[in-house]
Length: 545
Image (cartoon, rainbow, N blue to C red; front, side, top):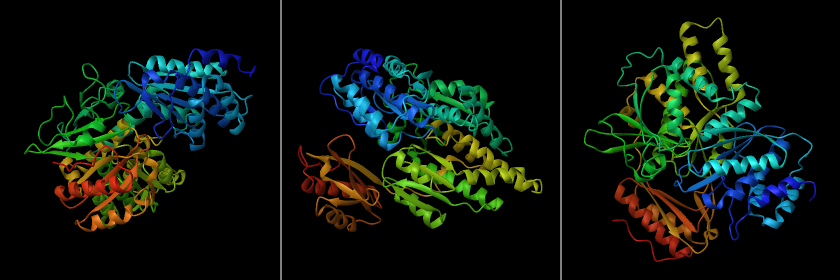
């Protein structure tokens, strides 16, 4: 181990606590910030190895997204701005959990199994959110990079999607954009302005949007970006971090799960608002009607709006592209029926987790993916982007065809294709509503959501649940899927599924049906079946009041 004296020395300054085990999942590592110093150092080391392996710049983001403020976390970003390769997720878990005395042995094992050429140089970009713990934890990452001889660039405070963007820009040598905040702001803002500049009858009221920034990093970055938007969008910013606590009774996760407006937000009936999450990679929209009723437009509604807009543009210019919407089992059944039956769009269902949706979306010319929680984006294949470029440059095209081609080109440019990005998605949605002259109520009326309910059941061991068909069907324990099927048949327009949590011994239950009462009843009935057949603990689930 003599070849890594600096790693050994630095590692002793970031010791691993006893009895701490963490699993690298879709969201990386997340837990109480006090338990993460050693993990951050080791992820700096791993990012350096990954950079050597790929011969490219790797990103490390210090954030815990929508988790409470006392938590923190870390995720690695691969060369094209995508999430860390699943093979290397295993290495991340291995390094993070190695006992202090065994860390160098684990490091050597990763180098060998990953076939890492240690003679290569390494370059790592690091960003952090606004949590009080992020400063020291991001420094631990930087320590890990330097201990293994890597170079680093500390971007400081960034949204998670902005760091994904920086990594891709750098590794494509500027082809995707400039790897600076100003470059990010300029690219997205200019595309938005070009999209909306010729929209007719757009009043100042229609240009106004209330934004709940979850008291997180999104507030800082949206404030920085406003001057680039040239007053084409009037933003009222709430929960900007000046008073409230991060993600506390605000933010996209709160709004989605509680089905109500965030604390601190004031809107008049019919006005539209949106909420980011703590690191600004999720977004949901909403409004309050004249009777005071709250209406949520989640990731399903967002995907449908975007897909409808793109399909219309492709039809207008005669582009025959393979378009698909990628969903998870949590997508509302009404959205799936609308896309398949009315829009005639292919819908692909994948396992829960953005990495699964992203990979599936890459299989199409245009892949629109959003989880119901508001995390998503649009991916264009190189072939699709090339066809759009050819349309823009076609000297023989008439004015209308040229206009639509430019709309498509600017739509591509306003989208952050590396990962779900609340700021980018917000600008895209606002542009579409402006171009189509559509109110938030008209958007909401495209289809009506089926009432749904999510519950969870504590079990002795979540591993007894095994699923198939993108987590929509249960393989084991025996008899559970048959019970669910029987229960579903007792309700109109119903479906239900269960899946094990990735982090705790609970089974998550989803049910939807024609009425609220029916959805609630089905969710409770399925929960009882899970409790009986999958080793429920802590008392039977109680019916909803």
